[in-house]
Image (cartoon, rainbow, N blue to C red; front, side, top):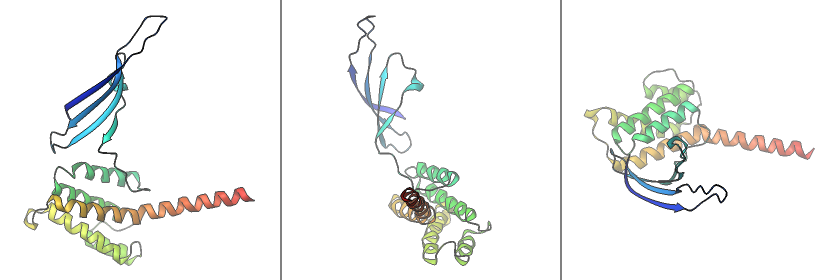
Length: 195
């Protein structure tokens, strides 16, 4: 990313015994993505004796994305990959979300097949409720449009819809069970302390 603006606040520090006074301070950088042209603002502390790999960046804008709780590592990785391309290409984003949906279906025991059949199989087995199949089918349909030129073209207006549907699906399948288990474990822990 290109640094398009920068500001530094230098700090004075000196060792009275050695007389050594390194240059140091806090920097604020505005970075611009060469692909999507969106800005990111970071800050970091530095001093002249630091190696570049020792610098710890703190993102001020946009704030760090909070992902649904309880996602397995492979699902989280696919989700993050989809999020990275969201602002660059809506069609690619919808296709990546469709891949995420296929992975979720396989992870929940569906036999690899056409996505519509996999969703029906999970609903028939009671893994997901019928209402959630409608949500997932919406994602599948957006993914089809994104993947097939003849099906049309998605616009940035569809991003919030795709994101909301994806979040709803992941929270139902992963976050809700994760939080229920967390609460149950905490209650058991409190009960055991009482006795």
